[in-house]
Structures are given as structure tokens and as C-alpha cells.
Length: 294
Image 1: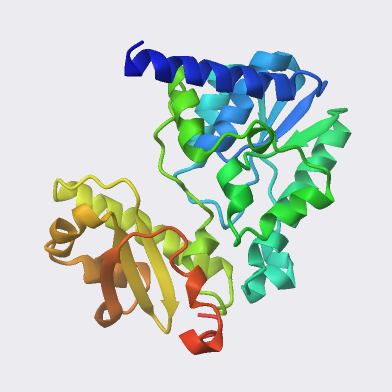
Image 2 (image 1 turned 120 degrees about the horizontal axis):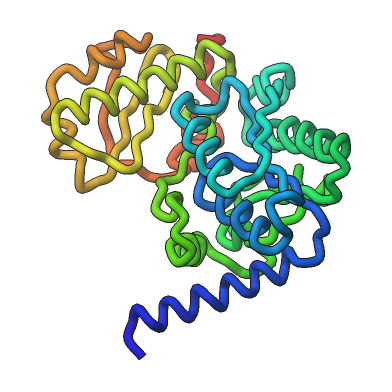
């Protein structure tokens, strides 16, 4: 058996395990961000239950990057499922605005509360998220508790699918999201302790879109890109390590961030690392920064 054949067989086994997890759920609303994990859950639910018994629900708020909704809508349409886009109000939750270590709990409580209520209104019996087996082992996932409190299903986790296996199965099923970079909410770009606000989230969104456009104009395509808000007008552009020399050489990136609302003289560039802000928690690492709302 060749390596490709073995990979295909393993993907088929994972697919069978995932479909078995979903087969008895009756009807399902998927908390659907459009990322690789939730897209796979949505596609699997359609295979296991039929499109007429599945809802895709994307929570729309200030924390959703402006580029995310359209491709999510397109994929849901290609799968033949009803796609709902309720507006959620994370910013009305004091715990979310405070941006402490448990911020994600308050965010997921708002989002999953809205989705479970919407599912109940439509007679849908279950709600599922794209939590995978790697997420369950991550010590910094306070949002998982919000799902557990609501009895939300986690079929990827239940089937033992890690992120790598999610991508492998997604590719096997020809989903366009199989290699999509992770796109967490905009609040994840903001250093803990800095107050979350609509203008602050919008500034990060503008900055990332502008930097990506500037890099594209320079002939540099990057996968993972973050603009981190570090407080007091400071920002850090993060790109994959192998792209860092080329990105650093692009002239005018500080001006691009200044146009988005950051301080031109306080822009740095670094290698991307997922969750890079998390280890900064604690007074020994200078947390929390105190700079007011903006």
C-alpha cells in the first residue's frame, strides 16, 4: 500500500467514526465559523442526517473578521443547508469586555446561548461545535466550559480527530477548507487586560486587511497573519517565520498600520505563533497593561 493509499484509508476510517458519532443526533445546528473544524462537522452532519435536518449558524458580531462571512456562506450553500447569521452581543457582557484570562468563556456563552435558543425555536434537537481532540488537551481553552454547560456536542473530539486528521479528512472529502489557516476571533489579537471595544476590534480588522493587501501588492502571499494590539497604540505584525525576512523588507508597513489607527512609531514585526499572548498572563510578565479603552 502506498503512502497516499494508506492516508486515504485512514481518512475513510476517521470519516466513518465521525459519521457514527452523528448518526443518532436526529437534527443538528452547527456552530459554524467557516473554519476547517466547523466546516467538517457541517459536511459530516449533511452526510449523516441529510441537509434538511442540519442548520449552519454563524454568529455575527464585531469580533468576526470582515473577510470570513462570505466564504462561510458559500460553503454552506454548496452543502445545501440553511445558513443563519444571528447577531450576537458579546460586547454587552462585562466579562468579555474586561478581557481577562476567561474572556473566551464569556464569548462562547453568548454565542452558544444564541445558537441553542435559535435551534430550540426551529425544533432542532442538538447543537454541535468544531472542538477537536487537540482543543480538548489545550490547557488554555476556557470557552470549552461554556459548551459543556449547555450540553453541546463535540463530534470531532468524540471521534478523536486532531487538527491534522481534520485536515486530512477534509481534503479526502474535497472540502475547500481543508488547508484554511486558523482564523480565531478578532479579540484574540488583543493583549489580555486591554478593554475590548467595538472600535478596538474594528481597528485590528482594518489593520490586518490593509497589511495583507500591502503584502499582496509586494508579491508576498502569507498564510497566517496577525496584527496584535499591545496597548498604548503599539502593534505587532506576525507572519510565518519563513516569510519574516521578506515581510520585514517591505517599506511602509508602519504607515499602513498608522492609517488603521495605530502608532506608526510603535510597530514591530515577529514570527507568528498561535496563542502567543497567552503566556503573558501574570504580573511577572507585565500583565495587565493599563491604558484605558483605546
